[in-house]
Length: 267
Length: 287
Picture 1: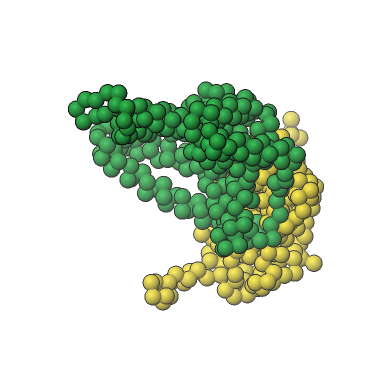
Picture 2: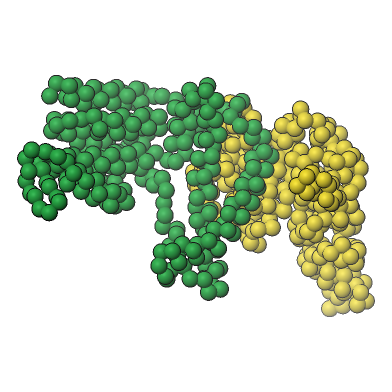
């Protein structure tokens, strides 16, 4: 049951998007998010849509995989749409009943907000689907490196992230074992109301925490035994180096962002 | 030149209460003298709590001696400036294969040690390939460690140590959590490294079967070395081993019992073939 959880779902395929440097993809996701909240009007919307379709095509990841991510935020989408729909003041009143008023502006706002949210999820999922978690942490470490000048422990953070990713499946498996062991002795995780079920999780968490700390201790010792001393003086087995296609990707990104801004200013 | 030399080594675990007063002192290692020649395959035996794991951590400079001295490759382990040199000279493999693999791809984990010591990128790739090949895990290099069996994970951990090109590797009960197949895989990989690459191996274990092929065996009990010698010499003392709560290999035990029952079987039989030959020598001629 718990084994079905996947974090950082990577879809292996041989596409140019997969081969791009993770830093480019991180930057692209950021720029795309900014552009989504910058564009105004139908022209900007068309440009953002075209860009998204172009990226999906390039990534060779089936569209259905990206839509999966949307399921998780259906409730958020409904609430956002409802708020925009009912609470936007405007002159053109379409429907009015009891305390609810739906205006033309409200419909427009709700529609754009919905599109923005959907594009946001689909757009960022292209990044996570085409980048392995390791590449992602590597990319993050390198792009945040300037922050280490103001004493942000960038290397330590990246190391923690990659170790966390490594141990997620192990801890999930362990939770499964502990649950089964407790179920065998009569524990009930499935019945009762929410509070009851939450309470039944406590005896699960205690042994899990204990074991996680023990693992952390073991791991720290193993890392020390292999001469780990933190970020300084380390070399990389797979160093990140920009290639021609990465510069090209940056160029496309700049053109796209400029397009969105120009459309907003002149239309 | 001996690669490892311990002289009157003592280690005490000191338990303190909240104010920092000493509550109790537990002596885990109590005056151990030991010498290991380069290229040897050494086994350290002992039941739980005999101090054998503590000894292993000393060789990797993870612990500092309370008294006495330990030299690894000519370096004193209590010298804080040489800790990383010592750790590079003496690699260490731990008991739990899951808790010592850092990366989520096999080859990246093997590369972790060389990355730490500042080896250039091309050299890392070469070492990763060599050490994965030497434990027979090269075809799994792109796999996730989570998908491997216990024996395979432990072999990856050994490759990770080998990639640092140590002179000696210490294995602290590497097979304790494995099934018989995995145990065999790991031991084969270890003895091959010892034979082909001349790496000094110190195998810490409580499985008797694993030490039959060792060059020299130390038996520890309550922090002291109580027996030492070639496997054949040590295993011929079945009764003494039992006093230290250790079992002998089944074949050795059978030979011992036969001897006690009055058959003229020689002392210290280690393998099934040896016993077969002995018995054939006794009865084969009468056919």
